[in-house]
Amino acid sequence: MARVFLENLVKVYGKTRVVDNITIEVKHGEFVALFGPPGAGKTTILRMIAGLEEATSGKIWIGDRVVNDLSPAERDVAMVFQTFALYPTMTVYENLAFPLRKRRLTNDEIDRRVKEIAGILNISHLLEKKPGTLSGGERQRVALGRAMVRKPQLFIFDEPLTNLDAKLRLHMRVELRKLQKEMGQTAIFSTPDDAEAMSMADRIAVLDKGRLVQYDAVDAVYHRPKSLYVAMNLGTPQMNTVEGELLFEDGKALLDLGFAKLDLSYLSDVLTNYSGKKVVLGFRPQYAEISKERRGGLSIMGRVETVEYTGSESYAVVSLNSGETTVLLQSNMSVEPGSEVWLNINSRHLHLFDGSTGESIV
Image 1 (spheres, rainbow, N blue to C red):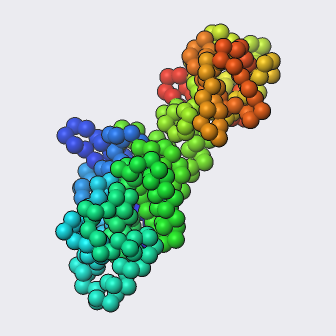
Image 2 (cartoon, rainbow, N blue to C red; image 1 turned 180 degrees about the vertical axis):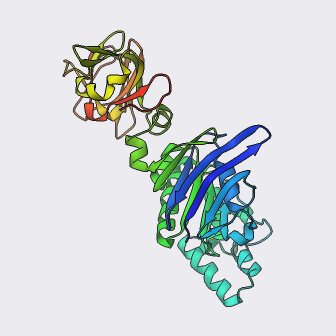
C-alpha cells in the first residue's frame, strides 16, 4: 500500500480548467471517495493518477516518488472502470491470470493467487465460465479480482458500482469496503452517489466544477459542511433550507424569515458582522421535532402536507410560507395531513450559510 499526495493538480482542456488546483493527501491504507456530480472532475483526477491523462501542472506522488513522468505500468496502480474491462473470449480464470502472466510469474504462483482472490470474492465456482454467461454483479467481482490479483500499491475505482441494480449495489458497497480493509490497500474511488460515498469511504473529497470544496472525514462532511453546496449534496432526505435576514434587536441576534422571527441570541457574538445580511438557515430532517405547541425561540408554524412512510421511518412534509420542509417523525408521533403544527429546530444542529457566497457561518 502507498500514500498518495496530489499537489496543486491542474488539468486544462482548451480554455476550461476541469481540475482546478487540487491538493489531497490519501494516507496509507485509506479509502477515499471523490464525490460530485458529472463534470466535477472525478474521473479526470483518477486518470491522471493512473497515468492515462497528463497533468497540465502540479505533482502526483505515489509512495515516495513523483510519478508524473512515469508510464501507467511503472506506477503500479490498478484501475477498475464502471464498464467491465474483461476479455470475452477468456474464462474467468484466464482473465484473472492475464496480468500475472504479463509479469512472468510461475504457473504455481499464478494458480495460487488466482484461487486466493477467487475465494475472497466468492467467485471460485465461476472460474471456468466466460464473462458473457455472468450476471452484472459477477462480472463486476471478476473485474475487481483482476485488479486485486496482482497486489498493486494503489487501487483506483471509477464509479465501480454504477451499472449494478440497487440491491446488488448495496451488497457490493459492503463487500468492497470489507475487502479493502482486509487487504489493507490504499484505494480511491469516484462516485456521484452520496450514500455510496458516506457508507464506503474513510474520507470524502467533495468536488464542484473541478474545485475541491471540502475534504474531511465522513462525519465532519455531513455534520459540519463548509458550504451550502456540500450541505445540500450529502444526505438523504436533503437538508432543509429557509432564507432570511439577520437582525439585531437590543444587541440580540434574530433571524427574520418574513413570516416568523427566530431567536439566535445564543449566537450573537458569532453573528455580529452579519447584521442586515441575507443568510440561509439549514437543518436536517432528524434535527427538528413536530409538536402541537411552540417550544422555545427556534419554532416555526407550518402545515402538514403529507406523511411519507419508508418502512422503518416516517417523514412529514411540512409547508411553510417559504416552501416545504421534511421532518423525521418520532416513533410515538402521529400527524394528519392538513393539520397545523410547530416545527421545533434543534439549536445544536442548526446551520447558517452566507446568503451571497454559500459559505458556512455556523
